[in-house]
Image (cartoon, rainbow, N blue to C red; front, side, top):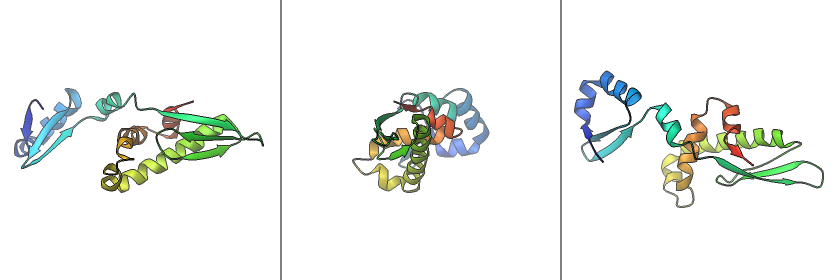
Length: 137
């Protein structure tokens, strides 16, 4: 880690710290033994850009489509592929919210730790259409 700021100094000049994070780039802060990074939403979106969700799609005998996401354990069924994408996006948002509610549990679970960047990318989207845009067939 390059420059690490002291939390006391950050607190003294909070406005400038925020301006630096938003306009210049991420900042690292240390308070006692704890270290954290502050990053703007714009920069975080760029960092998470490659974390997309791949869909596996199957057509059922009744003509409907069933899909699953490769990263999250979610499945949905719908009459069309477009409707399926919306349903899977809704499931992804629900899972992402659940993940964040129990972040410590999920993040420290070996099989779910790698979900974190995908969860953040889902939650960064402005609306459901943005989440649909993260889905690749």
